[in-house]
Image 1 (cartoon, rainbow, N blue to C red):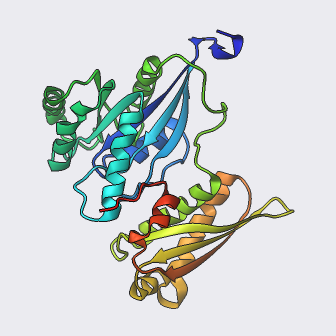
Image 2: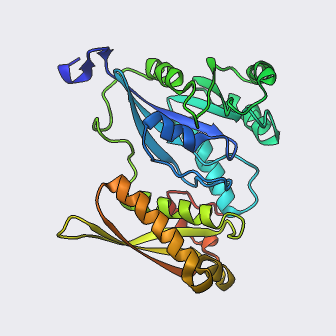
Image 3: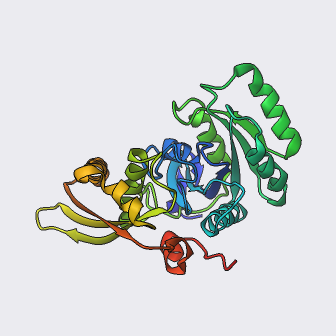
Length: 307
C-alpha cells in the first residue's frame, strides 16, 4: 500500500452507504448532518428526494459516500415507481445499508414493507431509529427489539439527525466498517452533484416550503443557464415546470409575490453555498404530462419505467 493510501489512523477506507427508509424518515437531514453541509434538500413534503443524492463525509481514515435515496412507499404513478426502484437499486449497490425508521411513527405500513424486503439485500445493515428527541422514550427499546426481530442488523443506533444527538457515534461506526481502499473523491468535496443540479434542488426546496399545501407534487425545476461573470458572480436562469396553467398561477402568486419570495430565498442560500454573489432569474412554464416524459426522468437521474 503506498503512502497516499495511508492516514495517521491507519489504512484508508472508503465505501458507499445507502440510507433507506420511508418518506420523511429523515434520510436527507441525516445526510446533511453526517457531511456537515447542505447536500440534500429537506422539506415536510413527502418524497422530496427524487434521485440518488451522494454526500461525502470524512471520519478519521475513512471517506463515507452517503447515498440519500428516495423514500420507499407504495407507488401509484410512474414517477413513484421510478423513485422506489432507484431507492432499492441504491441499497443493492452499496457496501453498507442504513435503514432509517422514524421513531415517532414506529413500524407503520411503510416501515413494515421495508423490513419485509430488506432481507433480500445481502449487505451489512444497521438500524437507525431517528427523531428520538421527540419520540416516546419508553417505546424506543421495544421498537428496536421489534425491528431487529424482523431483520438481521449488525447494530442499532438511536439518533436525532435534527439535533445531532448520536450522529457522531453512527459516523464512527460506519467509518470502521466500510472496506479498506483509496478514497474516491478529493478531501474537500462534500457532494458529487454538479452545481447546476444542486441549484435546481435548492430552488425546488424553496418552492415546496413556500407552497407546501397548495402546490401539487408534479413540479420540477431545471437550471437552463449558468453564466460565470467577470466580477466573480454567477447568473443563473431556472425554469419551474408545472403541469397545468392553474398551477402556474399558484407559483407566480398575486402580483408575482410567491415567485419573488421563492427566488429571494433560493438566491440567499445559493450565495452562501457558492460563496459568491448570485443573480437568479426564475421563469414558470406549463409542460403538460412531464411526468410521462422519458427525457425528464433522465435529467433527474431516474430510469424511466415503461409501464
